[in-house]
Length: 206
Image (cartoon, rainbow, N blue to C red):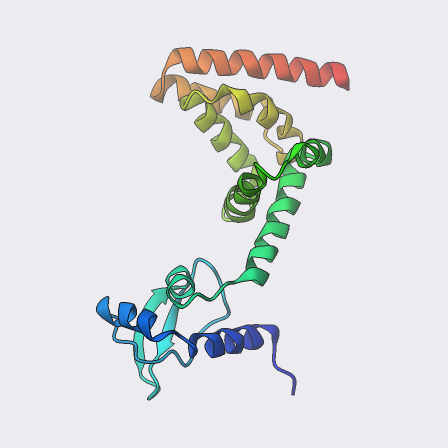
């Protein structure tokens, strides 16, 4: 019977981990993890999971985050990063709209390409792609944080995104009222001014 995708990925990484360099193994042991050889992982790969690493005799050795394993062994998760980038791009388009993302991609150069990759994988592929809370709630949180930290430049962009996230004008106002109480009235006042201007522009554009 054919192996599942998860089993294949675990097997692939298990093989890679057994090729650990001697000097890296020394660093692992120096940290007191007690791992003499990586032989098995207990779950499909996930960047936020902690994996049970089994010693050669099959006994539990330690639980460590994937990021540590990847860094200490030199294992690169290119396929996973590609998946996260694709998830991030899909989420980014769903929230900001194709037109905005297309403009951003067209303006991208070799200089800022690493930054674009970072925000696509990090902000959009990790935080916004997480379904623990809704896009509506993330929209309100984002607008509140932008106002509270004085990063007003991106407020119009995220006001426009409310068409896709489902956050209403009342939701936006409530977010800025919280900003007024906890971060200062002037910041909330300016954020509300930008929101009013952007909502008016959106209505004019139809």
